[in-house]
Length: 238
Image (cartoon, rainbow, N blue to C red; front, side, top):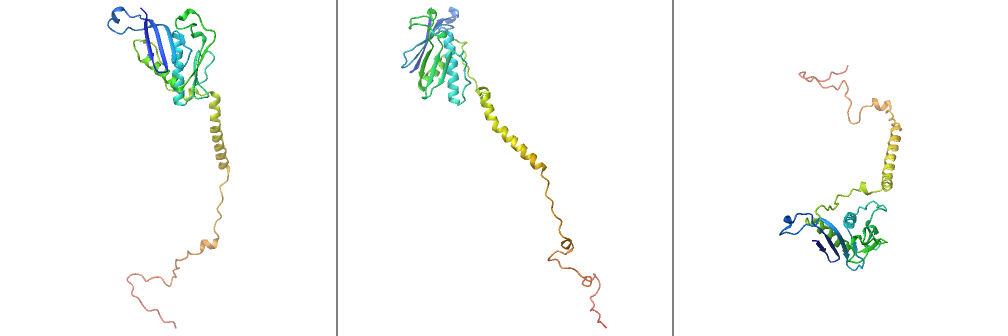
């Protein structure tokens, strides 16, 4: 019996249909586990286009949503995706976000069409507002937290590194001023090393022999008497 799960937000709705691989006894009296996805639908408010596909569409949308939201919140832009990226969500110039889904992931037809009924000929491009993007992220979070629906589905949440996302050209442009500054410091240090030290002239000999100012010169006649010798008046000159 097909199992259906729905995750509804004001601006985004997920509908999953599939089967269960769990034994009948394990699911008795409890919520059955949806382990095999056969159909996936995604609706956005105020958008006529509906995204209908299978497991590849769901996984691509989950990965693109996680990558876009992390880049938008952290301010660290992702490295440009190649042409093989089948689902992309990129910031738009008007402040919104552009969602592009490859035609290889989409089923042709309306809600009653199956995944294998045919493929659309052109990719789908939707313009999402910030509110629609965050409702899409909330739907992804609810799906990832539901252990009874695709329990092996992994949301790629990991810290972003500027070294990983910055292009080599940008790294070269940012490191050029640092390298130029280090080279200038090295050249200046080398120039200072080869400058001879200034010579200090010796003072004149007159200043070397002249006694210091404020220190009276002691004459031999004015030497103080030795201890134990009585003071005698000076002898009269003849």
